[in-house]
Length: 124
Length: 250
Image 1 (cartoon, one colour):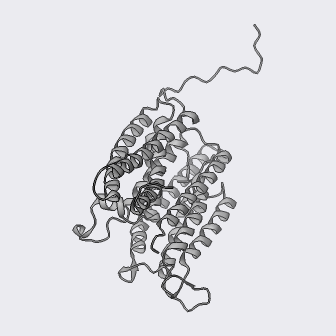
Image 2 (tube, each protein chain N blue to C red):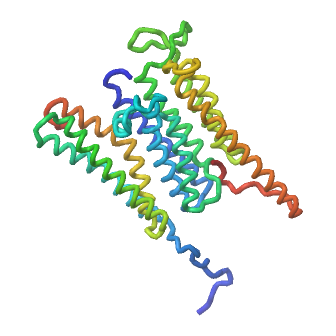
Image 3 (tube, rainbow over the protein chains, first blue to last red):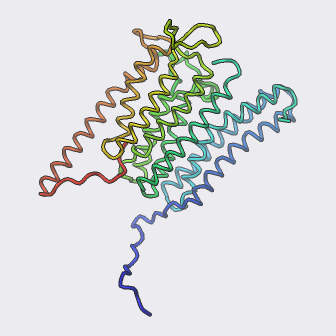
């Protein structure tokens, strides 16, 4: 077996044991958090359609609780995973996705509210 | 805000974020930071999103008159000023967390400037634009009164800042200078913005900026001392000081 003269030994693993952030895993984390935001809106919408009372109020109530649960879960997991740095970036992606969703979700929620105020809760 | 225009406002906010993301990706290709930059991005986004929502909570010195945090979170005004502060401290915290020592602000500054230029289009289209003016450049909103187009002033500032930041890339601490420039501009434009005057002829954003001024002075002092120490150490070593690696800023 011959070795190229240009060959140099690969760098040793980092002493901290930190696993590098991989873009694929980062995007999975972003997707999980954005999916969580979508889920809070979806659950709120379904509850508003199927439970008696004022639909927009029910939607805001359920979606609001969902957002609180999502915030606690996303930040707790995201920060822990980021500090441990062994998940390849999923935790970092979850924090990024949660923060982006926090800015975008009012737009989607607003659309859902309009549809509920209009009466039938559909977008057709 | 003009009735029924929240969707337009939020649409341009979302578009601004998309544009800022695009600029950030291009800047990342230019500076080539290591993978921990994503942790800094996460910190900046989370800090900005949280403080952008909660930053306007303290409207009254008597805290009982303010909304609860839950009400503020759900229905309160969003604030770009407190969002920027949150993003700044979020990034600092994240850098401490992952022991990332390289400067990162140069990556963010042009993205923030262009993103805000786009986001402010939503404000221009949906909010009362400013104080009344007799000037020919005044624009008339739904109340029929010609007003200063203060959001157009800000869009012009952000576009100019974007160009200047790209030209100064690698020469100065871009994010710090951008923040100082924006703070001075914002303080001035508040006189034409038409926000509620709450104390000594000043609006809440102006008071907020005044409160942050000592922090900015302290920050620049720390940076100046650090640079002087580095120069001294380089001289003691008998070799010329190297320019900082291309990943400078906040």
